[in-house]
Length: 169
Image 1 (cartoon, one colour):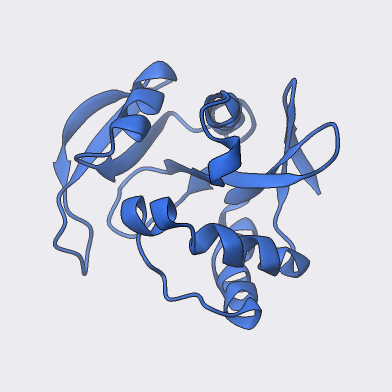
Image 2 (image 1 turned 60 degrees about the vertical axis):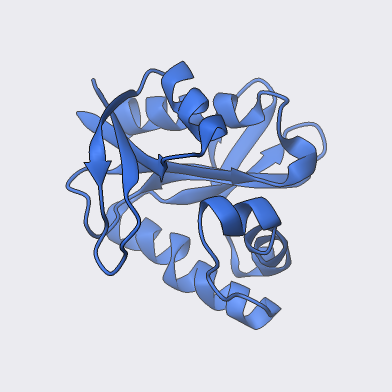
């Protein structure tokens, strides 16, 4: 189900059949380095991750991470969307893209559209984002879409300090 459309992209809800794509994305070296190793190694584990992650969030909150695909040919390239994460007071924006689709402006386009969706469709007053302190690519993207660094935070059951960025609407 299409949720957001931009000039080049469609952001749609994940389906269980997207498990092979999710498996590939979650095992990308940069995903593991910057987001974390979720231990997803099979299509079945990827499917369960979708059911208990984004798809559950759609039911609970009306939003979540969306599969991001090229509009012209519906090729899955990444994910982007809004997350209600334990340990953060506000909804945050998240994204990840396969290596072949980085550096082409897709993440910026998807993230801007996700912010607009949060503001206009979900009536959010504020969105935050978290990133590793040394993830310069994500830091630049967040600043480019209007978020500003606020402070260092640590999420529950984790000891890594993360940079928290925010934007008020």
